[in-house]
Amino acid sequence: MFNPSRRNRNIGTKKQGHGQANKLTIPRSPDLKGFYERLGNYTKHEVAINGNELLFVVEETRSDSQHACSIEDITTLIEHITPEDCKGLKFIILRQPKRKENILSPVWGRLMYSYEFEKNYGPAIILEAADYTKPLKWARSLALNDQKEINRLKEDGHPFVDDGRSLTAELTPEHVRNTQLYRSLPHEIGHYVHYLTVVERPGNEDEGYDAWDQRWGLYRSIPASEREEFAHRYATQLKNELTEMQIIPFTTKIRESHSDTENP
Image 1 (cartoon, one colour):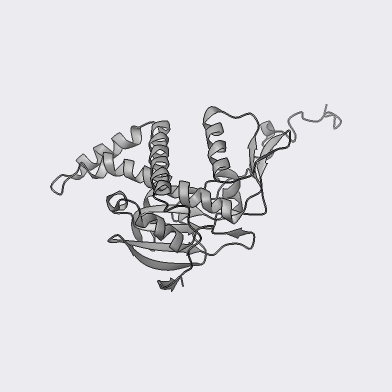
Image 2 (cartoon, rainbow, N blue to C red):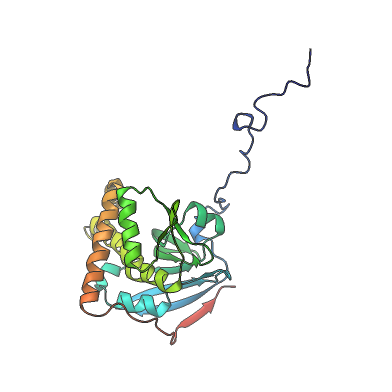
């Protein structure tokens, strides 16, 4: 006999399906673009650096966010990098991440080996705008790699405070600029150099696609930890060299002139 006082123990639980329709996820695009390729309002700026034509794409930011690096900042740094290390790089994207992306996939920057922009494809480095209303927060119990990253962030100037529950630091444009310009940008270029070394430079014009694809597969099979270590070494060496030459740090560059275009 039905007894309404006996409730199903699964009501309101995952076993019943509760909450499965409202999980926090980054929405997928119907056009198969990655979330980092979906931009809001932006401007385009064509810049020639050491014989390499780069297209800077600057996405409009929210009121609580800001791009820490200017186009001139990035241009100045790349001017002091070996031109061969940036050969073939096509885009520099200054991007405004969505709030969900800040929660689920927070990064200072990222390298895309094939980035689609206005139906053109090419390698791109993305630097993401920071939300200055929210502190940088890390757990007090850190793995070795996380501890190394905390030390790097402290070197960038981020003032971490131990509140007994976590390590927090209030973000400022100055400190975020130190991280992205002097470390994240060289780090992503380091990944690109690793890619060039394994995939592109050994090739020749007469080879078929299969040869390139085999080298690409070899590169992708390299453990992520090894690729990260390569990029860290490259960034550290570059930073040390430019510091010794008194090229960095430098004050924020003021915009001069670019060929600017707004998106429709």
